[in-house]
Length: 420
Image (cartoon, rainbow, N blue to C red; front, side, top):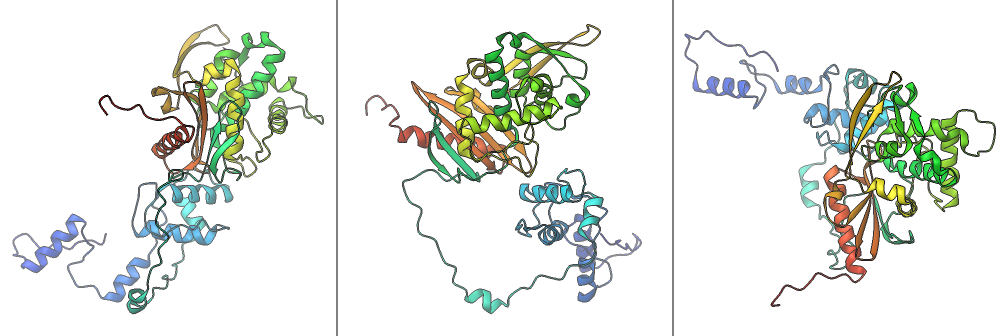
């Protein structure tokens, strides 16, 4: 804000000058005591302070400028509205630009990111004349139908029969999209299939490596050198969504999977087993490049595939028990024999409501808010998949609305109140 020049206190300000000064002090406008020409005000708006970081929740002209620069810099354009609202879409676009420039993808437009986007003054966007705008007749779409599935915020969704994995209803359910930590369903399934062949391995001890401990993102909290039983680590992976736990599993079991070629890294061998398993169970639209779901251009799944995957996960008694557990405590032991307790809390909020029993959440800037949920009514079982919801709350609202739609279509009806 330009400096406000104050006259000595003993001078009496005119009412007009007093009003200007009050507005400036309150932040309602930017004023100087002396009049500023319109051209000067236009020039002031053109100055770009790239050293000031911008973050989600910010707003105003600086965010508008950021959004316009992101639309110009990214190909294909993210199509951001230059509305000055630093929301989820802007955060995702910033993270995408940061990855393209080798900058840590925080989603916050720090000084380095803003300099990389350019510091030159952008031309003002063209604005049509008022008579053109006022003469326009805005077309309307047909009225919303009274039947059909509910409107949701997610980019894609699917409802599947929980027993067969068959997709019953969906929207964009066959489109490969980022899946975030719903990836861990496949990691868990590969482990479960290994345990089918070697049941005794459930009691084996996994020792955390430095690589596992340093894995980015959500964590189980196990430290390098600490030991945890395989069965317990399944909870550490699926409840708090421990990215580190998936790497530990890949390192522990990767040498036992059969893969083509002479790949020596057990973690890479484990990822290859994930893709082979995907092919075996018919996930034609999915591909895995890691065990945890952190963003990668080639790491995607369809909503329909994730529903099919979830049905396989829930058929395994060990995994079905894990994903339905709200909270789990575990004792860890380090190399010197020191013990430490940890508590793992399930990220799936639906488990607090009767009838829901899994399966996995997932959230990244690239994927948005994702959820694979399992619900039961009597002997009936449905799986709902949400990909790309804009907020955490939205994914749960979408899922509950889709479950209600699915139950209704399957013939479940609300009980009639007494006396009706």
